[in-house]
Length: 413
Image 1 (tube, rainbow, N blue to C red):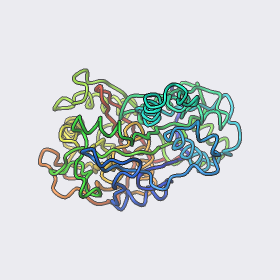
Image 2: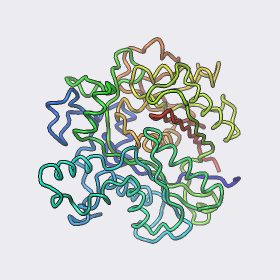
Image 3: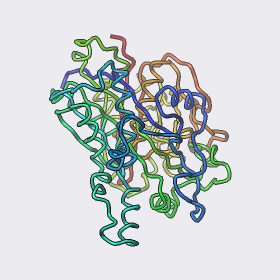
Image 4: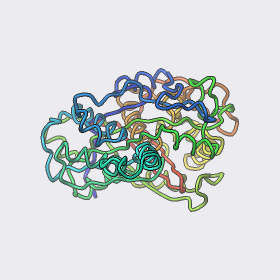
């Protein structure tokens, strides 16, 4: 378990852009990717806004026939994985072999395909159901298709832990490399939940913002005016490698993944305890796994969903874990710009955390205008901050009380 794990490639599809550079530029500038829903007629629903990956087209990576077999979340994963491999200096058309794996998860998989095919069965009978339905909808098919395309014959895993999925996938992939089970793993999350069923379900839970008249400001983590999260879609993918493997092929590490931990609240299906004790234990275990003291962390990419319960609980957990150092932390939630990508959130935020280290820039929390006193921290960012960042913590928490924390360090050799 002493093998060092580095990030060598990044890929992204998000409401803020269809690749990594465009997404980063928007997030760093605090530019929102939220707008009116166009995927379906949402006029009858109480929520009519979302973070869509506007203009996305898998294009030459899949012809019309193959697209019938690919749910949108799988298409996102394919595009983001290819971008990450290219940045890592790998041939995306080569077979990577038995020492390469794929750990790509999804919170709810092909929910829009499930909704569509249920309607076909109801309205037209069994013969209207597509023979491609099952292989479109299964949550592990993003990992499966990426593995097939790139000849990854090593370990493959499709984590599905709600909004902690991306972090868990990346953390488990890193452990697979540290154990020696693989030399390289393509890891992250993908999600395409924006359909009538998913939107209605979250809306009836009263989890979503109803700021329909002003979509760009609807996602506002830590702000006193927040009224719920905004659902988004996309993928965030990283290429992880053992340092020895990366050096052998003369790759350029972008960051080192030095710590990972996972815990469970065992408290409530959707709400964290007030002190977020499970999140506290998770962050402490990640620090212990990395061999780092709390004061080594410079920036926290918070889970920060823009919900009344989550945001103050996470701040309370940060104060408990970091003590006096909490007042020196830079903290933001990039969900203010991207919305909440559910199972893809952790993957995208890992990409953004690596870029924060690369650029020496902590991105802002978009739409943070009036900080909720229960969320107040001196370093809570309403605008980007240039800083000498060495270690970034990225948090992700999910329904069921599941928690995952990643620690990324600037690669200095």
